[in-house]
Image (tube, rainbow, N blue to C red):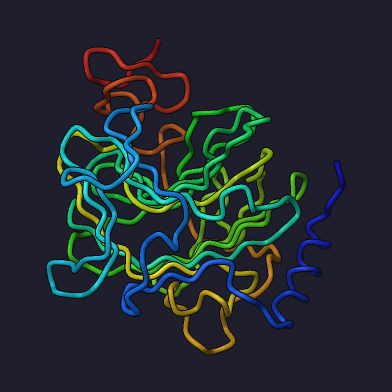
Length: 303
C-alpha cells in the first residue's frame, strides 16, 4: 500500500483547488433534477429486506417540502428502516480528497436517525461506517468509527437541530490510509472537532478501508414516520465546487487545504467516548451504547 504523508495530501489538495474542476455529482431540486442523479436508490422495509422501487410508504421522489419549496422528499412509514441514495458507487478512491456539500431540512427528528453516511463496503479494516451524521435524541452528531472498532461510535461534533429549518453541511475527506484527514462545515462555518479531548479544526484519522461511498437520506430511527427534504447535493474535488450546497461564502477565508489547525477551545465534556450513550442512557440493543457498555432493561450499563 502506498505511503502517503499529510504534507503530501496538503500539497496535492492545494493543487486541486487551484485548477479547474468538474463536479462529480450535482443535484439541485430547484432545477427539477430527478433524485436518481444522486445514485443508486436503497429502500428497505426491514434490514436486508430490500424494495426495488418507490412505494406510497417508502420513497425518495421530487416533491415539495411543507413550505412549498421543491426538494427530494425522503419518506418512510413507521417501522421501515432505510430510504437512501448511494452516491459515487464504486467510484471513490484511496489517496483522494472529496468535498461534499449537502443542503437539507427535517420534517422529523428522532433518536438514532442517520441523515448521511460515509459507508464502507469492502470493510477490510473492520470499519463499517467510518463517518455518519446521526441523531442522539435531538442533537445531530458527527460520528467516527476508527479502523478495527467496526461499530464503536465516537462523537466528534454535535448540534441541537429543529424541524422546518434548512441546514447546509460541508464535509472534506482525505482518503489516505496513513494520513487521512477530515474538515467539517456547518452553515458555511468551519467547525471545531473533538479529537479525543483536543479541539481541532482538522481531524486526523483513517476514513477509508477499501471502498467508502457517501449516502444521503434516512436510515434507522424507524420507530416513527420519517420525512426529510434534500434540496442540493454537490460533490467535487475542491472547496469551490461545494460552496453553494455547503453555504460557504465567496470570500477567501475558508480553508482550501487539509492543513492541521488546532485551537484552545474547550472540547465537549463526556463521561464515555459516545456522549449521550453512556451508563443510564436509553437503548434498544448494545449498538446504542458506547464503549463496552451493554443494553440492560432498556438502559446502557456495565457488562
